[in-house]
Image (cartoon, rainbow, N blue to C red; front, side):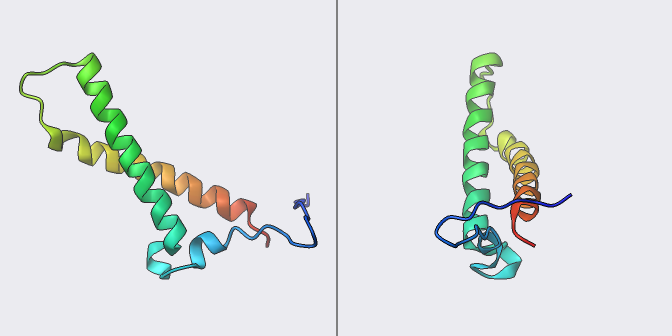
Length: 89
């Protein structure tokens, strides 16, 4: 099976820039930015969920950071492989 890419004005989309636009250890600047945004949104969502559904007088803000990090990491890995799959060979 072959993959089709959309050609607009003679240019093919190149999603590899997401990972090679910065230091490779950071998956590129855009990839790093996506991870930070995913982490922040997840952190806020977990906080809102905990306050809404499990009100706790001894609520600890630090409890949600490891959970948010794990969820954001899984979401970023899914984003990474989806972008690698969509990138031209």
